[in-house]
Image (cartoon, rainbow, N blue to C red; front, side, top):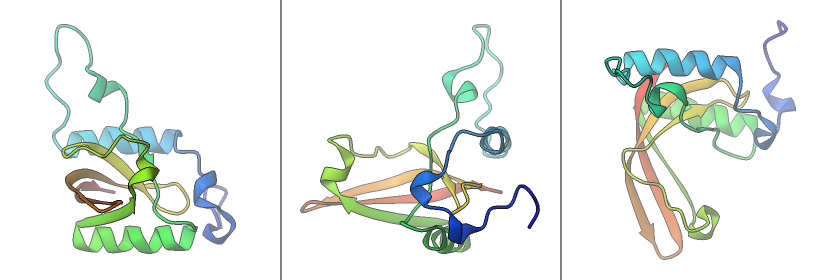
Length: 133
C-alpha cells in the first residue's frame, strides 16, 4: 500500500474528513464534465463555482460504503433510506448535488437527488450519477 492508500477495514466511515484536496480536485473535474461551470460573470464566481457540494459516504463500515459505491456506479443511480427523525426537519430537495465517497473518503461520483418520498416515518432519497471519477 502506498502512502496515500487507506486500509478500508481500519477506517470508520464516520471518521472520514470530507474536506481535503482530492475532494476539491474531484469537484473541479465534475463541475466541468457535468457542464456546471457557467460562463464567467462580471460579478465573480458563483457559490456553485466556489464551494463544492457536501460529501458523504454510505454505511457503517468502509466495506459497506465501497459495496454501495460499486453498485451505484454500475447502475448510475441509487437510493438511500433513513428515519425521518435523522434529517432533523430538513428533508432532501430534488435537484440538489452531493459528492458520494467510498469507504476511504475518496470522491467517486457527483450525484443529484431525483426523488424524495416519505412513507410513514421513513424517507427514501433517490439519486442519479451526474459524473463519476
